[in-house]
Length: 259
Image 1 (tube, rainbow, N blue to C red):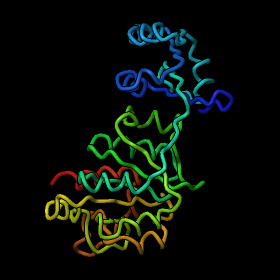
Image 2: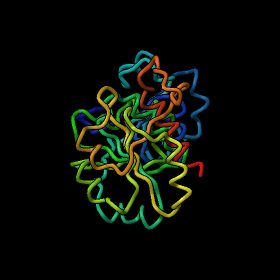
Image 3: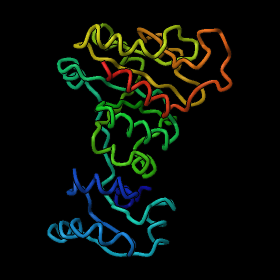
Image 4: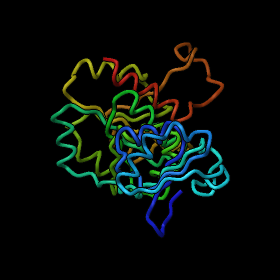
């Protein structure tokens, strides 16, 4: 939940706040917690006292108002609203030089899905996530921060005006892999591609929860892959059309990095 007057974002959830404390305690301007969790944030309170930050014990109902959710888990940290860095060629050239993979989200609209994707990316060591400046795309929110379970502290999130132009600019420089139900190659292609050319980064594109990737984005992918289901090789139909995008992301990230 954002406080527009103070340009703040509420970070809630035990794991999210603990990771924030570990990696970037300087970002926290105010900390509120219930009596139950107070002993677990004594160290952070001492840090805030030194930096003249604010910390206070509050009832759970107050934390709900601060965070806008009942899922605050007894702690809310207020930070300055994150500014997402625009992606430029200097940044992508660095990825290519270092052989770093990246993920492009094509209008992932659900904040919980976005947070879960961030969590999986952090788990598999994928540091670079790109989102379009599009109203249909979720961004960094209280919900996505909480669901990421601390993953926000281990990834870099960048914005682009146009996903299509980004894909065109990276043609031949990275392997651009899209995900689609009509794909002919299964997701195992990712690990094979990574093994065959370990120095060439992979940029994987995850599409919108309902409509998948846009046609223009699809046209600018080098390959399309699908997660196979039991019986797919025998031509059997799947009872469910697709996995949730966040679940699919975990499988895809595993294949990207297992080589």
